[in-house]
Amino acid sequence: SPPPPSSPPPPSSPPPPSSPPPPPSSYALALTKVDERRARALVQEYAASSGDHVSLVVANGSEAFLVAGDPSALRRLQTWCGEACRPPRPATRLLPVSAPYHCESLLSGACGAAVSALRSAAGHAAVGSDALARPLISCVDGANLEGSSVACLHEYLLRSLAMWPVDWPAAVRGLLRCAPCVRRCVDYGPGGGAGAAKMSRQAAAEEGVTFEYYTQLVRPGPLPQSWLAWLKLEEEREGGGQCVVDAPS
Image 1 (cartoon, helix red, strand yellow):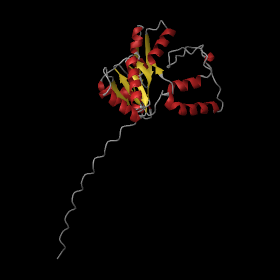
Image 2 (tube, rainbow, N blue to C red; image 1 turned 90 degrees about the vertical axis):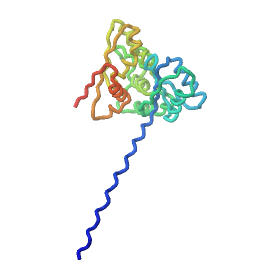
Image 3 (cartoon, rainbow, N blue to C red; image 1 turned 180 degrees about the vertical axis):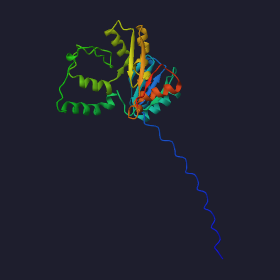
Image 4 (cartoon, rainbow, N blue to C red; image 1 turned 30 degrees about the horizontal axis):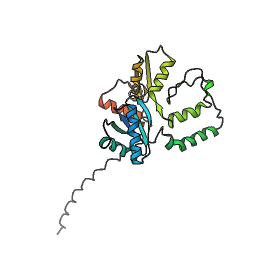
């Protein structure tokens, strides 16, 4: 007699759902809705009581600041701001920043190596600020580098863009001092609505100047992964801010 038909195999169980990827380590914590004096006092109080090395490194506006530090220290600072510090308490947000930019004590080694590589590069010649024919405003303190005594602009720009603290409102005021007749400025770059123009709009408004800001996101490529582009996309989801997005194919 023929063998009995084999029973069908049991249905395969669906694969277990994949766990969400862990959030990226954040080396920057945004503090907002407090003024600079309060923000600095909070960071200093937390650092003194915890022993964690955190630094207020960027002023984006009169009530918008960035703190740099080790990711675990910033998470603890965020918890402390929400639960333990005395009012007024800041609003906080961890940003997907991959290094403690503008924190000299944490980045001095990396920047020192970059400066050494720059100095040893074939054909490198130092260009000082005496070569400037137009105003160049420092993002560190708003000073006009034209006619200053900076010996090597390459090194100055490297350090100011990566290692030294940044004061965007001071930079905007410095720009307006160089061009007092300006009444409208345009910020065009990867940051767009989250760039220097929007973050410093209060400083500009005090001078009677308006800003228009535009964004360029290039895909594919690393730019959309930058924290500025991420903030811009977050703004789009929340429906805030005036912006124009140009995404070339």
